[in-house]
Amino acid sequence: MSLEALNERVKSDLSYLAFGGANWVHPRRHSDGRVYDVVIVGGGQSGLGIAFGLLRERVSNILVIDENPEGTEGPWETYARMVTLRTPKHLTSIDLGIPSLTFRSWWEAQFGPEGWEALDKIPRGDWMNYLRWYRKVLGLPVLNETKLNLIEPVGEGLHRLHVEGAGAPSASLLARKVVLATGIQGGGEWHVPSMIADRLPSRLYAHTSKAIDFAALKGKKIAVLGGGASAFDNANFALAEGVGEAHVFVRRQELPRINPIRQMEGSGMIERFPTLSDAEKYAVISHFFKHNQPPTNDTFNRAASWPGFRLHLGAPWLNVEEAGEQAVVTTPQGKFAFDFLIISTGLMTDPALRPELRLVESHIARWGDRYKAPAETANPLLDAHPYLSPGFAFLSRGEEGKPLLHGLFSFTYSALVSCGVSASALSGMRYAIPKIVSAIADQLFLDDRDAILSHYFAYNEHEFVGEWPLPEQA
Image 1 (cartoon, one colour):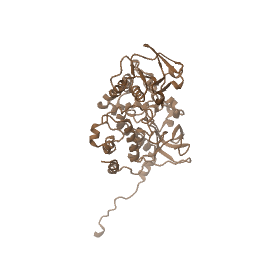
Image 2 (spheres, helix red, strand yellow):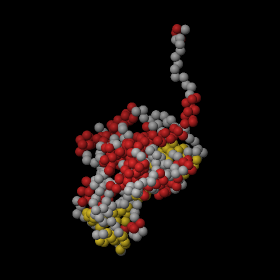
Image 3 (spheres, rainbow, N blue to C red):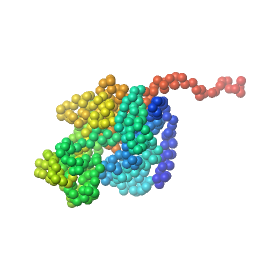
Image 4 (cartoon, rainbow, N blue to C red):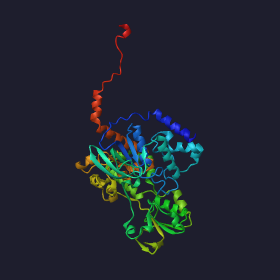
């Protein structure tokens, strides 16, 4: 089967499901212009999947915005530096149960069933190409180069989105519902320890989330701080780009070996996580943080096979200082001088760190507001996460914030404690997207209930037109 044939198959499959029926949501009007029922911020895999899910629910007055140029949404063309995805290839995601929309169908259309059998894991670049195809074949409404700067509640259940960029049609958009589908960093910000940020000029270091000029580092000696999957992705990438030596420094005495997501994928944990109690949710994610994600075996082996690879275990950074054109790192094992540092220390999650939420973040309930964890599992990093509904909606700390937060949803890594890994791991999206889509549609329905019920009770179209006795018998 060719891609052209697959495109026709997708259209046929969707027609059998009556995809694209009439929008049922009552239109809103405003003197400032069009009111979208839903605006999704982020045109990566999450945003695209949610848009498709809403269209299946006949919620079609929607828009997806993304600050990046078309075809570069998400991390795959920017800071993601793994060779392949870490997720097993057979797990489905944003296809939402439509076989012709799966990555496997897209792959087999080009390389046949034998090509699928020969594939080990999904190459990163091919995943991005699949997302480009998915967006195109579904005709999803995406505006690129449109950056959200601020969400402003304006009353009557509306939010004004202040936007900018070459693709922005105006300085603001109006929406009833706003979904933040802005990826791992969308719930906070990437974290660089102050010991580094306060003591080194920016030319000597970069977080893994930033653009790095690897060409300028050819033959150089670099250090990577962190023991997770991303640290080894970056070490391998740097060595493949010609770096002379890449030293990975890990705080632990032994690399993490357990990947809790693999257990969650088969145990029902990902899809049923929202049914757990607050105490159980907190304990599960506290355990998840304890182990985190280790490097995949293939990534570790690739990195370790380079002559310039060095691994330092039990080596937290005690001090970092500038020394001429280099950065000097002090560990319990001694001092090391490097030409450049790559920081793989993850992110901090807190709505207060998001500039687009600055008008409402003080009202957003955090886990620390709703649950007091026992000492053995308490973690301030978890406490700062927003306390979300099972449908990914922000909840308010008090009555004052309820109308301001109504209609705001977070499908980002910050949903981790409330909704599990379903919004942050590809393996959970086939369960999470229907939940958020249902929550948005339910909220739209309830917002319009008076008009919907009024029309229902006033409905008077005659469907049955039969007469008795029959006219020919009269």
